[in-house]
Image (cartoon, rainbow, N blue to C red; front, side, top):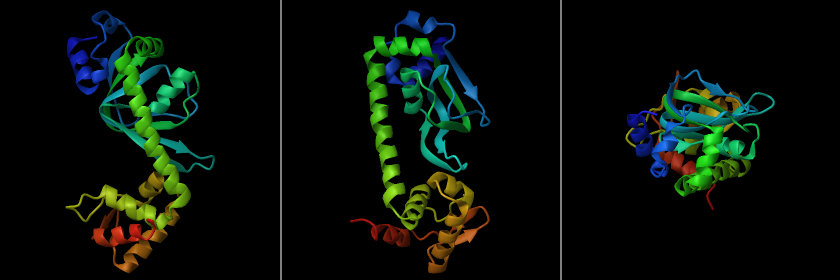
Length: 224
């Protein structure tokens, strides 16, 4: 492992700061760049623990009918806790993952990862913190899917994805459907209803004139 790679890893993941110099010399430890075409499918057995230095990886589930729902994204300084759970439990990976932007990854062979988790407390603490954070995200997602109407979920999604200084979001109905785990037809129907109310204007591959105040009111109807 090159010194500059070690410095880069520690900059992103302080939990590796206590790793002893000799432990970095394992021949299969590496920093790699991966293209957007890379994907990991549900049910596979992992050979490495993966830590994201830069880029974005979408973690999602696919139903038996082929419908997708996004669980969370893994960005610089983060890892996929479902991957870590699969490794520690010696189980198949229970989700799918795809690289959204060209990404730089730090990869540890499974045997090395397990040794380091046992040996280095900061790494264990980091993994536990990530589990807690991701559990919160997934719990919120389950709550939304189970108890929130689609009108609320679309309004919330548009508010989250559109900066306050902007009224335009470049996104397709298919992409929104994948994020929210529903059919494109459902998204299109609801967005047309929103347009009819004057809350936004639909365009090809984009949504314009998004009225944040109106969407906040939509959300407030379902908040007790």
